[in-house]
Every structure is written in C-alpha cells, then in structure tokens.
Length: 266
Image 1 (cartoon, rainbow, N blue to C red):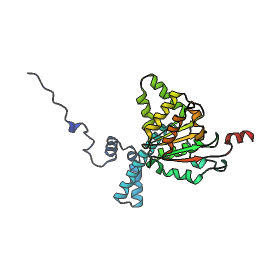
Image 2 (image 1 turned 120 degrees about the vertical axis):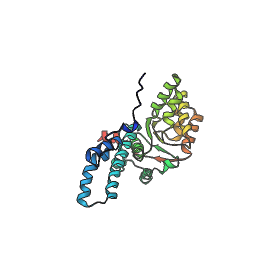
Image 3 (image 1 turned 90 degrees about the horizontal axis):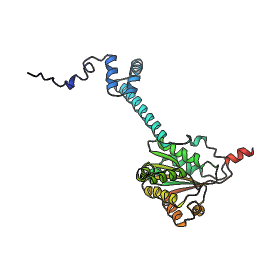
Image 4 (image 1 turned 90 degrees about the vertical axis):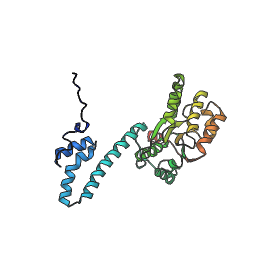
C-alpha cells in the first residue's frame, strides 16, 4: 500500500514563536516576525526607562509605537527624496534673501504650506540666471517630499530628450507617465536652449496632461513675451503652453544681477 505524506500543519510553522512566556528572546522573535524593527531595537531600553520613571502601560506602548512610526516615516521620506532626483538638496534657510534686487519673500515662504498643491496650482519663477530660481524650486520640492508628496525634479531639456528617445522606441506612453504621475513636477531651466517642433509638442503633452490635475513648478529666464523663441518661433504653441501653466498659478519675478557673477567680480 502506498504511504501518503500528510501536509505540514500550518499551526506548527511558527512553533516556538508563541508558546513561551514573556521573555526577551520570545519578544525579539515575535517582533522580528511582525516586522517591527524599531520597536525591536528600543523595547528593552524603553522598558527600563518606563520602570525608572514610573510610566503606565499605555505610556510605554505609545512611546514604542511612536518610535516605530517615526522610523517608518523617516525611511519613507528618504525614499521620496531619492526618487525626486534633486541635483542638490536645498532649503530656504540657506537662501540669500539679500541678493536679488526684487524678490517676494513672504509669498515664497508661504508656498512651504503646500496649499498650492492641494489646489493644483503652478508656481512660475521668472528671472535672469544666477538669482536662485532653481534653489527656491528645489527647496519647495524638498519640503513637499518630506511632507509625503511624490515629487520629480527634471531639467526641461532632459525631459524633452527623454520623450524624444521614447518616441523613437515606441514607448512614449510609459515615458509620459513618469512626468504626469508625480503630485509635483519641477521643470527647471526652460528657455536656456531652444526646442524644435517635436520637442515643443512633447513638452506641451506633459503640461496639458497635468493641467488642473497636478502642480508644476517651472523656472525660466524668459519672460512670456520671449517664449516663442524657445518653441521654434511657434507663437501658437508657446501661447498654448503658457495658457495652461498660468491659468491657476503664482508668478514669481526675481530681479537683479547673477549671484555667481557677483562672486566672480569680487
């Protein structure tokens, strides 16, 4: 007669994990099983602190959960910052507010509340090179990433080059999603190099797909009247892009001499 091997009892797969009393080895094994690494690292130290300071059970438990939650939040924030692809991390604390001849500081600082993201509004930074447009855009994007928002920083020319490459390999829809899905897209340095007709059309697709759906922060050295020169002298295309960007937006104009030029002169 053939012998049949019985299937393993699922209740025995964690044998030894739940059958012991409240000793530290069992607690360590259970926390490992539950994937609670921060609580696992701090449970004993906090229990000693609780004993010495007379905490009740609820206070001890709340401290343990706070440690785990903060650790997970920090890891998640670090991951979002990496995924945002900021060239350099910046914040407003390191910005030299005294250099631009004209800068609406109060308005810029108010953007850190991120209410513009909730309202699907855009931020347009206009100004000559070297006045800190990229610094400001990065600082706001960095604050958004730390606050739990999905952010992507990209040079405008790099976006166009990437999309043109995807168009050539018939993978444009997937490439477009990279720029349409984030809650905040930062398009840096629009206007420093002109775009051909195809590049302008592709950038229009990005802007149009995000219109009234998600926010864009854009930095440019071109005032609106100069935009046609960026888009192959196509005034209609320039107007269509500007119209969608500026419908729900805050325009920030910076005036003054380049900060880098000033340092060279010194």
